[in-house]
Amino acid sequence: MAEIGKDIDKAARLLAAGELVAIPTETVYGLAGNALDEQAVLRIFKTKNRPEFDPLIVHLGDKGQLDDYVHEIPEELERLADRFWPGPLTLLLPKKAVISDLVTSGLDTVGVRIPRHPLTRGLLQHLDFPLAAPSANPFGYISPTRASHVQDQLGQQIPYILDGGVCDVGLESTIVGMEQGQVIVYRLGGISVSDLEQTVGKVLILPQSSSNPKSPGMLKSHYAPKKPVILGELDGLMDTYRQKGIVFAVLSFTRTFSELPGSLQLALSPSGDYDEAAKNLFSSMRLLDASEAELILAEELPEIHLGKAINDRLRRAAAK
Ligand code: TXA
Ligand code: MG
Image (cartoon, rainbow, N blue to C red; front, side, top):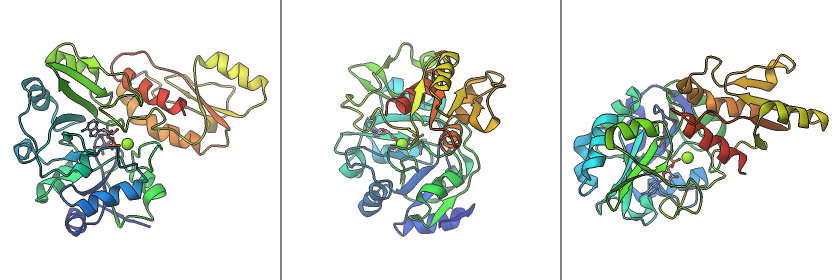
């Protein structure tokens, strides 16, 4: 099993030696390695069982380091960086040659972000290299939002998990780039579309599917629990599956159901708070995935604030 602790020096020593360390960020836990060390990068793909055509995000300690790794940054994206970094925003920028094709899966852009979690910021400021880090889950499964999630799934394969508690945002970063003067959202995430649009005006949201050639890794079945997830109107779904005699669990936005045992239902936010719902989403999916239910019934949220990104993850989970 991996050791779990808060020792930044230890994490830094392991990373400098080419080992992988799980790191907390405000979005989800990452499986980090030295982004400039091809062996460490290969080890990330292997540990996650991730196909090499799915590029990694590079994490920096501060904006001053950007020049070392990318060419020009378009003005609109610069404004987004100034407003949302450190935070759950990844920018796709033209990469310099020091960033290996392994990291970007051969693309000429690299995804870069400055995370906000204090432990990982401290770690990054301590290192003389950036960290490549995908979410610290086996490929295709739900992203981890606490150290124990990482331990459960990757603990056998890595020496150390830096424990930063429960992730504050709970959804992966929003991925943004530019093509022909147009700001494009490649992945919905922890910064809402309305927040982006306050800074740069109307953005284009790319269809969130596997057919998106710019984001080869964004397969529909990402973020899926092992149990089937059925999305729809909960009362109707519950009737249907009750009649079939199937044991189900329910994931709602706000409601609880008196006729269901507590172990078979979770409300993402009883008060209807979108940030709280995002923070609870992945751990709730994990809990219901571990329940005695055969399948998980879930409902979409209104498409405002983080509702859009939460629905994206629910649809991907249901698409499996
Ligand atoms: O919040 C996050 O972004 C977390 C934390 C750990 O930072 N990381 C994360 O990484 O979610 P990962 O690898 O699970 O998801 C990154 C996504 C992938 O779907 C990948 O295809 C896309 O970002 N991506 C990375 N670089 C890209 C690039 N140059 N062009 C297009 N898509 C890219
Ligand atoms: Mg991931």
